[in-house]
Length: 194
Image 1 (cartoon, rainbow, N blue to C red):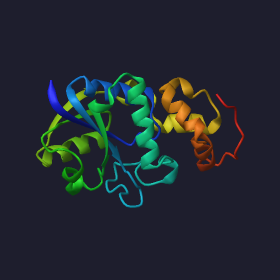
Image 2 (cartoon, one colour):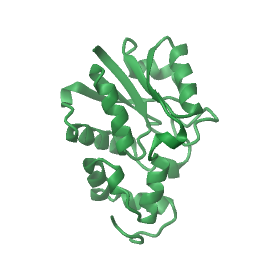
Image 3 (cartoon, rainbow, N blue to C red):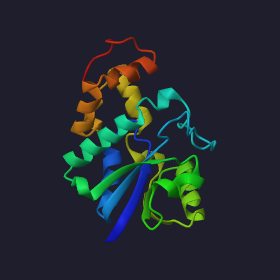
């Protein structure tokens, strides 16, 4: 088992496929650093044309702190002890800054599900960071995506089944589901609540 590992994602919004990825990485290390990419899309907007979701507010409805708390609560819900993980900013659009946020001696775990993931893998390797691919999946094998989940939330579809219970509760208790609906142009209160 590795001492320290790093994993990263936008987590806009956190779903069960994210949890599969997080837990697979946690099983390989004693301390897991969970990097939140695009912690602020104004300060750290996408710089790669392959980073299709790192620029627009509609794709990034949650703030850094909201994603931090959602991740924390969900990891705890899944039985990961608080002393076994840290949550950090991970400015993927500024690779020159990554070593200021994440430990250089860690193993960087990834899943490859498209060209943007391949580019990030190459970037991490070019920085001299040790990377390990957990799995490579096609779009068909990937499962629910954040894009699909945000659309379900906006339309009032059955979305809770795709999220950890703690994350779904966090979303509704803070009215973040309504924020997502507003970003998609759905007036507040419309759509079914699931």
